[in-house]
Length: 287
Ligand code: ATP
Ligand code: MG
Image (cartoon, rainbow, N blue to C red):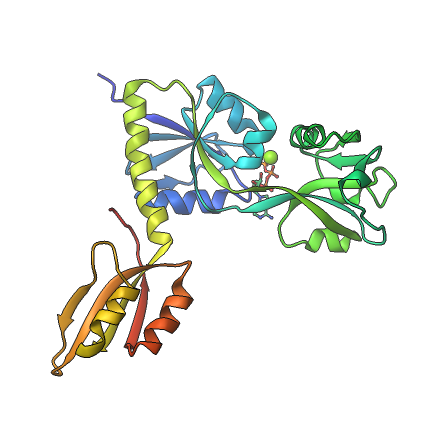
């Protein structure tokens, strides 16, 4: 019997590729360079990989040509295909914003009434306008949206903004953030039981990688009388590991802390008398 494989659609090249390949690598899956081909081989997991333009991924996944896909949430919302968002992946983060010429005063959302807005995301923009009962003309263009106001084609734009550099160099300013996006794992809503099992296995790996990225392993030295206070600051997964040092009355404490409260915790630990604090990355984390 032919053993079951999952077909994964990923972006062929662009702003999602690096994060996708890196995530797969951390999951123990090596993608061999497909060059210009549509398919790539994966080692380390029963996967077949399709290399596509990100715009095409929702269709491939909803049709079942691919079982799962990795793409930006913005494309999921824009294409409105029948696919299931399985997991936020935490990379390729960006926002979709409305921007207008710098010299024009923005008076709030009512400013957009009757205006021409250029975008390559007409569906998301239309949803936003409807929700806010704004009547505006949507001009769909596929690239270089930022130049539209400068050439008199639009009064505003709705586009992806990351650093804002492109807006600035086109004399625009961001006035509304409509959505935040990041890469997501999506799946066909009706996978076979076999394929769903494989997806769960892959998801288990992805979750271990994502958790590890959000946490750090911390090691520090502390005098015996400070142990209780320090332990309460770094509770760890179950409780911290405590090992006696060669020097009497001193201990080494090992634990896990979240990246988010990293700097607060470090400050508090120092105040509580911790010394020789080491913080190291975690590669995988399984709870
Ligand atoms: P394709 O040729 O595959 O259609 P594209 O030109 O449409 O590529 P990219 O610019 O590579 O797309 O962006 C792919 C996705 O990456 C976007 O849909 C968005 O989710 C995310 N993204 C876009 N711009 C940025 C950015 N500046 N920073 C981070 N993520 C971004
Ligand atoms: Mg695209």
